[in-house]
Image (cartoon, rainbow over all chains, first blue to last red; front, side, top):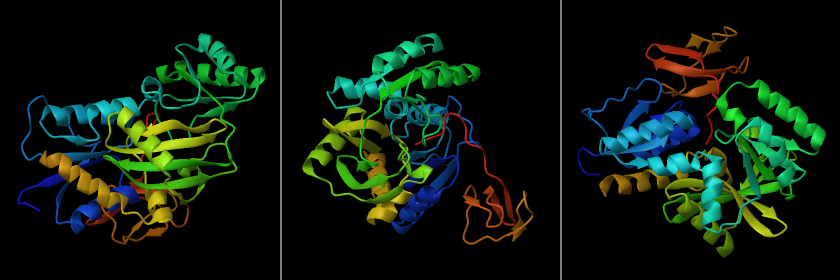
Amino acid sequence: MSEGFSLGVFYTIVRPEEKAILAAADARGIAVQRIDDGQTTFGLERPAGLPDVVVNRSVSHSRSLYATRFFTHYGVPTVNTPEVTELAGDKILTSLRLAERGIPTPRTVVALSPEAALKAIEEVGYPAVLKPAVGSWGRLMAKVDNLEDAEQILEHKAALTSPVHSIIYVQEYVPKPDRDLRVFVVGDEVVAAMWRRSSDWRTNAARGATTEAADVSSELRALSLKAADAVGGGVLAVDLMEAPSGLVVHEVNPTPEFKALTAATGADVAGRIVEYAVRVGRR
Amino acid sequence: MTQCPECEAAVVNHDKIPGEVFPCTDCGTELEVLRTEPFAVQPAPKEAEDWGE
């Protein structure tokens, strides 16, 4: 590695993923700057001593949005870019982009007020899934089986004061097997894929789903790369379900976790992220 | 070595780094490494509404 090159890792908390990225950089002789998103300030002038590229690992969508903008403003490229962070970090914007690119995705209806939410759920039909537009790990998601469920969930949402909860994102419930797929994309390559199985309808690894390596068929590879490209490309985890009509993409995650994927597949995900970031930093 | 701020169990630094989160082996509380020299921990930050992948 050439003298002086350094890689920034912008983080909220250090999880096994961030430790793996730090170790992968160290193993490649790359100097690392750890940047704590809760301790950093951003002025309008470029500060001294910035890294050559920043890998955004903040778990906060709001912090990620502004930090990637500031680093870009200072002339430091970020992985992912601010545009990808904004788009893929918001399920509504992601759904719009997937639809624009003709990528199969579950039927989705958005209501901009709790008053319109019931109408959105009825338009999607039962059962429906309500998700927060921002944030993940399966938190605050609800499966709505009938009108009674819908009214109860919406009453709870109305009690939450944050404006985030007045935007209601409703998706059809896809009658999938007890598993879904996560495909990890770095640049224009699929690094690894895994099945996530759960008896719960939510198959997030963070919710205790079990995982195993998945073969990457040419169809899966092509669809995953197309979905990653649709949101702007970079380091992305594409989540897909097996709908009766075929594979559908339901999420594209811009700061994905990969501990479970690494364990299931043995893929050097952290190493691939670091190598990609170095390429971005040298452009 | 330090103590868990919740249950006061002994918490040992095994190659941990500042910012790292891990559960207390006794009570399960998620802890965050404040610093390594001297080793100090605090309860990990709570998940905020916009946290995710």
